[in-house]
Image 1 (tube, rainbow over the protein chains, first blue to last red):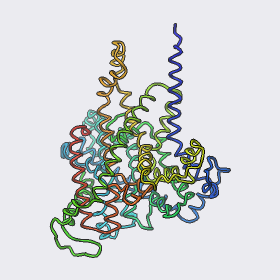
Image 2: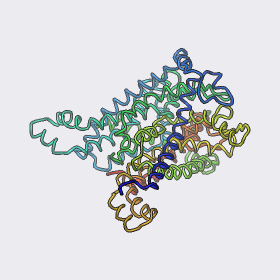
Image 3: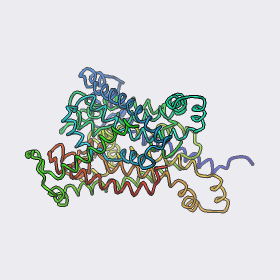
Image 4: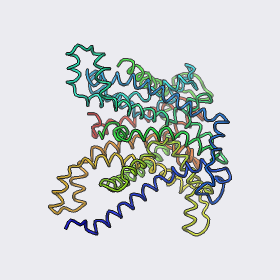
Length: 277
Length: 277
């Protein structure tokens, strides 16, 4: 009697159908965006809409590169990667100190993470005026410093968690063997939390990459990031759908690639370390 | 440690001090004098119907989107909890909306909701049998559903991922024991499953609560707060005050109000949720 009962199999099949249906519903909008980026203008501006373009032509992308709009993707790339590098360096050092030397106790850690939760709109205004004063509006250095600061709490918080997961005895053993505290940090601690470092870096990158409000306020024409560029194509009367679709896809590809490599750390990353998956 | 803290102090403490200072002055677009005017700006807040309207809109988005995301996310987590063919692939695909830039999510849904070139009206047209050029982002009774659909689409997978991780950690032996004792599905859910996933659920809710509180990007692409000021959120209102109407001092007062409101919620919630370990 080891046959699986029929009712169970029917139930499984039903579950599978619902699961596939839900996945399709959530995926369809992404498909629609990607597919629209390959349409010709005639196909996009046709009513009723076409669900599959006649050919996968790349003209919409070529136009972005020809007009120089694609530079915004480069701007995003530069700003996001340099600020990620800076935030990771400063943040990991700070996290190590918080995790191992109990600097400032729990209060300091809590204060740091609470900074992450301040809504950007509350601070963007004074920061804008500060930037006008320094002449940092619409400059790479301004955007890089801003995103570094903006992501520091997240990096510190996540790395503190990853470092706390490392057994302390390893570091003590290294100290006894004659390592200096610095050597312990980069010969024992850093290699031990390699995965966490990479995951945190990728999330930091994604946050900067996707950010909009600060970029809207603090850029004009020189360092326009891709999110701001997308909104430029929305007009009062009509929207440039071909450009919106192509630019959005360009701006989603790096994130998509990052996530494919990140599956294992995803849940811990988006739950701010609350769920250790 | 120190460099990270310095950066944080600069971006966290400077804006607050500055806000307090400016909010007691009378700086507007036409009046640049830094004379102190006392509580005038704060009195104006009390009588500003547009501001309290924006607070109301934000609360509407919050109270509808949050439960929807929770319930759909929980349902999906239950659905995907046990083995299914292609389960990992489907979960991987469902992650996509979470990491897409909110601006892109807004662009996607403006494409979807477009009255003539969007697939949603087309499908509705198929169902009712004739063309339905519904103006989703313009008709007052439809803008809220449109924005909420975009928001729920993007963030339900977030809930889903966290809850899935939490459900996977529920003690199986307890569930089996309860099932053998003849406990009903809902009894098991409320007495065993829910208490066990609550810590994660609470953090997921908290993160989403804070995100919805600052809701900006999706509304910006879909309606810019319109029609009129119907969908203006706190963030969009503040942006308009500060960067469109240049009510410098008033904006500072509003921004401070936001910080105070949020800090109150946060302090209460952090104690409850125990995000700090």
